[in-house]
Length: 564
Image 1 (cartoon, rainbow, N blue to C red):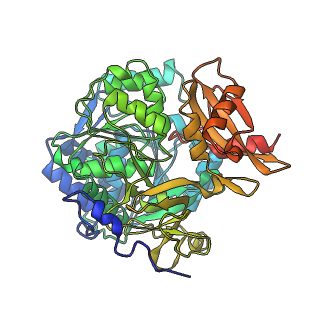
Image 2: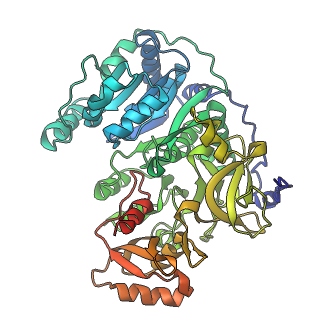
């Protein structure tokens, strides 16, 4: 196996702007616990988290997370390394629980609050979590499986619990009684989050020695491709990635009153690192959006604050652009809109620039890399289509299926090496061996290329590639072309089985113009794409299946076609 790295010498470093270092010291901060406690001391009076009109300062977050951590130690009897599951949307309780658990030396298992009982049972058993904090809307799901899991301590919370009186009580009443969003549940022995904080007020948080190699998160991934696996992310992994992002984007630390819009869920690695960790490190202010799918409500929240940063996926940015009132917001403070999680389409970035004055700055990574591996320079005045340069202390290598390095410009699997790469998958050595190459290189499963400037371009996920008569077709390319059509709101390209060519390209489209026809789409593609890339079928839908983060589920669409 060839490990001669074309990136030897890291030729992309010449294109770093002045002041961005080639390397960071991943051991400069011993743990996330140390990082949080440093911020609490230095930014005590600053706003830390806002949700539904209630703001917690860094001093308040310090005290509430201390209480929560103290209760976990003294009342729940949890010890360093024990796992605690957190299953909530973006509400104030979430950062308090994350920080409190880490200060107590625990390992956090983030859980998607939309999980089914089967998915929840798997994750609780696989991780060995012995405690869970869950919002009451999902409590009935936990009730179905609790007896079959190792969980002994259950803490339940309502969305309004930390909003203060009377707003919190009114919010909970509306959610429970008016909107009827909380199914009936019974979890004997469970405690309320507010009860735990009250008890923790009189308890001591014992000091815990947490180091870089201790496990901070078991971050589950791969649920759409089979059984989900827990990526083991250490304190060093996440401290390193936080320091890498801050070093690469000095803007993050230069604005004293930085405000970041956190609409992606904190249980997702993108928001966890790019929003919670990065902005807490720099003393920023996280505005938590509980339900970003309510686009009018989302825009209303945005109108209340002059925000400097926003993170999102392509579908979220596209949704905002098509929501009345968004184009009337004040964007004078906006410094960076950071896109990741899926390919940002040129058409969406251009529309975003027309409305906000800035292109979407695209970055890339995966759960296994904590997650950020590459990013474009925030000040770039054009949309490059690239996922950008490797972050400080990060190397990118394009490899063939045997793990051999390919020349610059060649298309192959993107491999990454750096201090942000996970230790492995939790209790799955065989799965770990499939993705880890010698000398610390991680196979990412993404197909791409690197240009002579050191910028990386994603072609697609290996598993999403469409093979038409032996030719590779990358869905991102086809989707990017079709997204330019004025009548198209959203599009997904997937493989459709075909007797003659093995597979052909099929499109699923949500129309902006109800009069748009399949014939018009195919005619447009014939002008813009080589013959084998032109779709053979166009299916119109009212909506496309998506993850809770907003990534389009191509696999669901592929499976639908395969059943026909």
